[in-house]
Amino acid sequence: MAPWPGGAPFALFLSHDIDHVHDREMWRILADLNHIRRMILKGEGKRARMATARVGRAILNPKPPLRAFDAILRAEAQFGFKSTFFLLHDHYWARHGARYRLGDRVVREVVDLIVSAGCELGLHGGYYKINDTDAYRASRDVIAREFGIAPVGVRNHYLRLDGERTWRAQADAGFNYDSTFGHRDQLGPKEGRVRPFWVGAPPGCDHRGLVELPLSLMDVALFRCAGFDGEQALDAAWQAIGPVIAGGGLVTLLWHNTYFDEPEYWDWQWVYERLLERLAALNPWCATGAEIDQWWRKWQEGRAKASGQPGPPSA
Image (cartoon, rainbow, N blue to C red; front, top):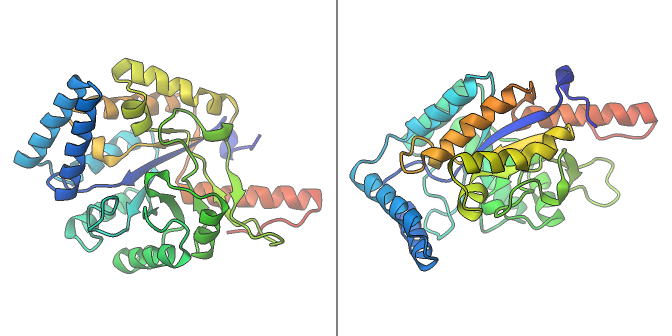
């Protein structure tokens, strides 16, 4: 069991994938309409009506883009928490591509808001080239050029992961940690992984590659795939992360900015805020992905030295 900083009983990694920024954006509206079609075919009339109302509001009265980020940061700051936001860089004219451009003035305002709150900016790796070192490096360079921040962490869009091939490409592109390992459609940690672990090192290499920060729970899996809502969703979410807390592990939450400040999806934000409230009462160590990565490397290096074994280099 890892002795977390300050003697905390477990660690907490709050994260947000920025898939969308604008309400009135063609590709997002088309994706929402396709989702409504699928819900109707499945007989989910109530959810389809709610989603249709949301599309109508987005077209006729789109919300200011920064309001969702304000809501996230206010909720976290209430407990002294900070989080990591993964910024998507991928093809714009593509089905699973980006829904905004990094040169957009509003995106710069979003990034300024995130950084001024003491939060971290990471890369949301593109859907189409998950094993391409050059693609990761290009995305990292674009973010560094646009915002003056070279991200050290990555999580792939749709949680796309091809095991060691993906991790090796990310490590070769200069990333220190990944947080893609998790379920898209199930609750709880994948393969029972509740603590960081090493990935992506070539055979025979004298260092450990990337640190993987495994995902514990994603909002889409809870509300869309499992179909929970309201109090039921809160209870299911708490049960899903319970074993991670009990094992003194790393609770990693993924809540998309898309579903904050949304009257139609009010319970997505409400459950997140209630989870923060419950977690704060247990006094975890809450840190950004970069901080967790740095601490884990140093702790592993200390363990290796104590045992007389060669350890990974400090970040």
